[in-house]
Image 1: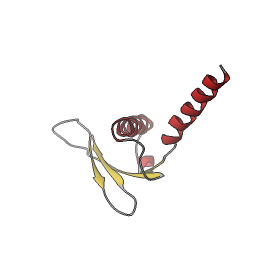
Image 2 (image 1 turned 90 degrees about the vertical axis):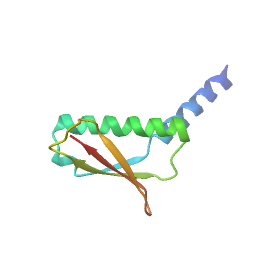
Image 3 (image 1 turned 45 degrees about the horizontal axis):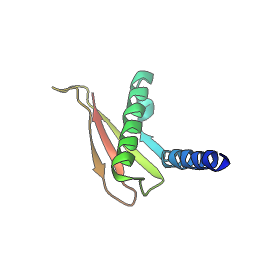
Image 4 (image 1 turned 30 degrees about the vertical axis):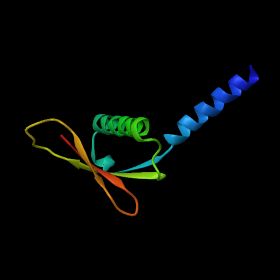
Length: 94
C-alpha cells in the first residue's frame, strides 16, 4: 500500500512539475482584469494541450507577446510560434 501511495505522489509531483513553466506575458498589465484572466486561461489550456500531445516542453520559460486587435471581423483568438534562442508565442485576440 505504501508503494502505491508513493508512486501516486511521485506521479502527481512530476505532472505538476511540467506545468511549473514560467510564462512571461508581455504587456499583460495593459489589459483589464477580465481580459488578463481570459488570456491566462487560454495560455494554460494551450500548455496543457501541448503537453498531452507532444510531451513536456524543453524550455523553462515561455514568453507570450500579446497583440490585442480592437477591430476584427471574427472574434477568434489565434497565435503563432516565434522561434529564437527561447521560443515564444505571439497571441492575437479581440
